[in-house]
Length: 372
Ligand SMILES: [Fe+2]
Image (tube, rainbow, N blue to C red; front, top):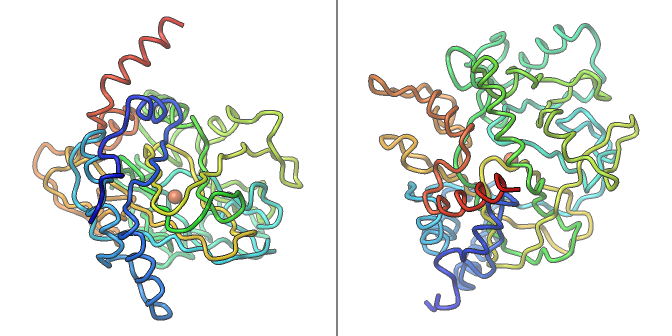
């Protein structure tokens, strides 16, 4: 296999972009042979078959230059055994309520539901909810796959993410270090189902987590400044995927609104071609978008990578957004003195701590910011 055209490390300019924007697109990071093998496997898939653990998919990281790039810029990690198959068929705007509690067709930017990863999602109620906020909250979380457990870290979403990571319910989101989005089809024109990112918002998210930590040590939804549900949404039961304090920092004259007048920051659609890869910090708010204008299904293979230093004795599978717990929310054993929730809170409040190859750039950029 000829991988000579593939880069094996980010350039300094790419690292500066990663620091500034929270993401970087690496053109041709995956060789055409690997792209073709993954596409062939997708074509061969039977209806309903899961390709998450297929080698043709995990090789997009394990056998490509993504691995040396990540080793250099981030550090070591478990080779992914699984991934998320982000295949989105062409679709028209829909009338259904989305997870934010809005009609899909009313949501700007091709239906983007810009969110942080590692958050519980239960199927959105399709009827406008009645009752008090407390009643709506109770009904919503009782409608998950495990039934009515009340407010509990054992509550799981339909996306198999726990409501809280820790028994003390002080950590409302799972976390990892890096996202890797591998592009398998032409996404060079907007509106083809691209991954969309809120460029630069990773800094604001880190600041927000720090403020939460300083306030009472509770991070994520149900911590300070981040209610779980938005009862002002049209269905009265929308998930708050991004705290208002962060959302409002990214509103500008280009921001579009839903019919209720609420304005939403404009995300950047990531334009890529087959073999291109987008690497981001965990901290970047992001979303898939509607494939409204594509001529084929949008195909991004998505990996969630965690630096091995977070929990050296645990294996992260490459797809989980909550590896402090098992994939299905199982409680894992940790040795004496290893508080996984505190480690994850530290990582959330110190975004670049797990990016060893970014240390110099971070120091350089922070010195520049201090001087300015
Ligand atoms: Fe996500």
